[in-house]
Length: 156
Image (cartoon, rainbow, N blue to C red; front, side, top):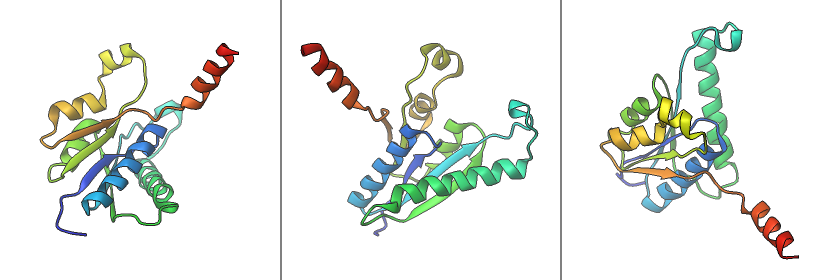
């Protein structure tokens, strides 16, 4: 790989984030650069009323990220180098921080309730507002099979 800047991608375990990671891997191969996969986590000791420790949450984040990367590169004939980074904190802020020296920041857009986005904000929107590098927001991968089948049934 050349001296190209890395592509940073947010990985949260969702299907949309898997799609973003795949896209980032493909783009890195085209550009001849590495990928920095970032998983951001928060420590909430009584989440769901199940006590947990900081070390358990951190370990889970590290393993979940490693599994996401393993799955993404498993069936590829070629994959760029992938640096795996976990960080505690606000997702958008940590992703922007991880991308300070990057060529791109890649995040997944999620389908969700509009009210949730208004009240809580959107990580992808915050990344677009805060980042000093270009941000690619990928929409969730759509399954058009069901829509095509519904259209065919309607015509029949």
